[in-house]
Image (cartoon, rainbow, N blue to C red; front, side, top):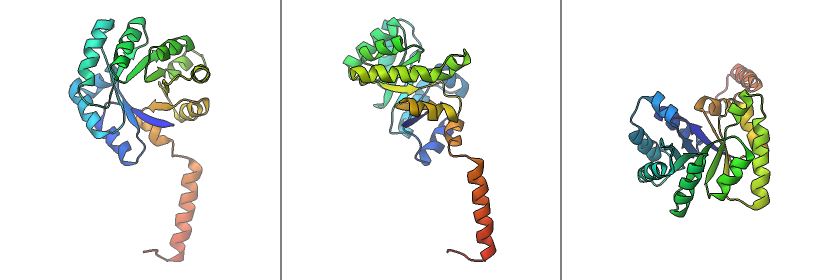
Length: 217
């Protein structure tokens, strides 16, 4: 499974990249607003920091506007992925960009039917929002499993990008369900390595080693 970090904070991206844990980045208008920085400048800087895909979302809601904005975003760097809403206008814009060889990420997907249309439109990624479904007492991971089955049935190339990830359990469940990518906040990705038994075991080993009075160096 590939890991994308869902952030517009450059320090978080740089930190994860140094650990080799980063395959790409996703952003959205809310994340950019929270960063307090210029949108296009931020996207360009992120693209220069990572080799993988960087999703940058359009603000327009009509197809002509999405296409115009998406072309501006795609020109910022070769690894920009134009992020579009899962609407009819978004599908139309997606089809346009697919014809131009420009990668797309269809966001705010909540049903298998939406994901089916996204794949038929030629999207590079579909982003089912598992956490927001869970908030409504629906099974977000069931959606991942359904999309995986549909895509495998028809050999669609669109990658399943599990989004709205809230915790470490979401990531492992998405991996088991067959998601190709998980995008999550930096804190969630860093937290995947943590376990109290690992910490306790390391503390015991360190204490026993110190008691020997030896040094490897």
